[in-house]
Image 1 (tube, one colour):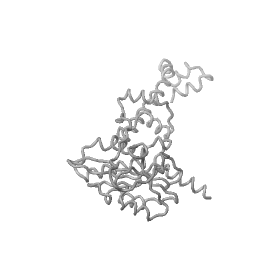
Image 2 (image 1 turned 135 degrees about the vertical axis):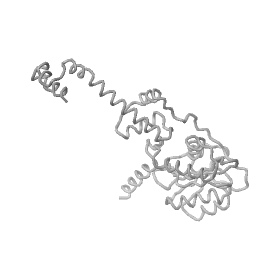
Image 3 (image 1 turned 90 degrees about the vertical axis):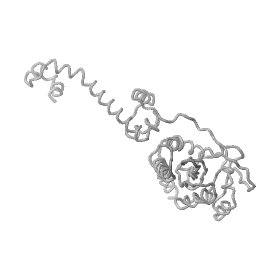
Image 4 (image 1 turned 180 degrees about the vertical axis):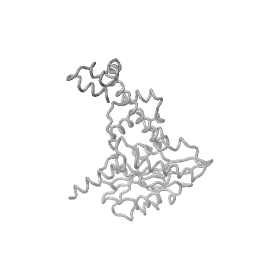
Length: 296
């Protein structure tokens, strides 16, 4: 405080005289004057490093330099990605993610009719409930395979519903996921429900269920073309690398709890590049406000 007073009044009074009156060393004052900016810089750097550390661990070691940079910007801290990457390397922080998405295909050897690919890889939507995508994947629990079924809305990329089942029956996979999704969100008049050609989606039970609504048209990927359902498959890649492959599930209850926690985080906290680094919940709110204004 005394050093700052001397600095603020050095144009009016001699520095040496003020140091004497305020009983501070002139050398100490000049040392403070030389190092104060360095101290401020060091303090700012420590705050930045602490913020990076917190964001990294809050993401369960998932976020790399780009997402950490975006979260810092949301907090009013603007730095280049290369600088964040440099600091992370210096701090020994590295995202657990390293693999790129590689699609997988579904065995579609069944006698059920298949729907046309109406979605046609148009994964964009400005309206909630307009386009939903779904898929099923395998999860090892103990010595047995279980099955995760999900339905996502392309407008906000939110996981609307998910089901963890011990078998691949239509009843316990797609049917339950559809019922849950419909309870949580209304569909538009031109709703498209897209999936691969798996027997569960082509079954009489699902086609009959979907036909109950004149709003819904079923769409299926072309044979052997996993990229036609890239968003749904990409979500499975994400949840496996960010969550499932990091655990050795012993029981169904353990797997269910961990997956539930992850999907809640995915929907409400995780920022998405496809959403301009917003969360699905933020995007949902944005679209609701936008569509309210359009109606008005």
